[in-house]
Image (tube, rainbow, N blue to C red):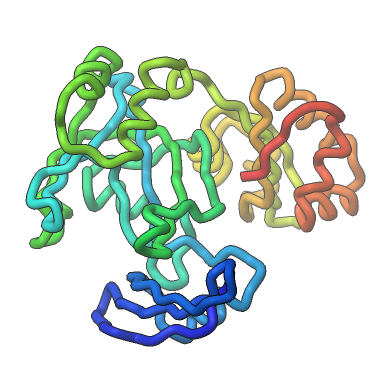
Length: 293
């Protein structure tokens, strides 16, 4: 099966409709109607490429550290004429990174501040591939602050909800209208300690004099702010913080400390090689799962 041609049927600011002509497995030509956020030119480039395109949107799954609760939103959605339980989400603006978009959308829709990452899925996941090629990255994170609706757009009707595990169970057993992702994430929340666990990171930053500093932390946002301010690190206070160069999720504290130690023993050239090609870090920790962030 393959796509032969595409014709534009309707075009608007955020969404377009296309008639896709494709060849079925028996060789006959078929037609399929599909909606997309892409232009017809970008669609054709996407189909001719072997690579996945960049995600259209980001979905944020926030865990509020202070209250120990998962954050949901209840948003009025016109196509179903009802309030739908979902997670904060939004389109990624042109030139904007996934994490940058996540911070902005979380703040705009809930008034909460993204403070740390659990996981970031950079590979696009498709929402309803039988109807659209719209895709999103899913970002699991920690957040802080108090909910606010001050940043909502006029067209948005959103309520922010904090739920603990007992409340999550009640939602799962109810008949409330919800996004599929809510069903899956609430099931994970109820049946695991995923959101309660600590995550350890090993990081590399460059200093103003060109040297490389390596450390480990459970809160990369706080730690970078400390380095910028010259707090809790004599080295970066003296040398000056330049930027975060590499970040690795190591799972446990002992793995994070071990990787930090191994990187510190490398020559400057080898450290620079790891910054240029993060995959090289795997040679330092045989058999240990290391994820680049």
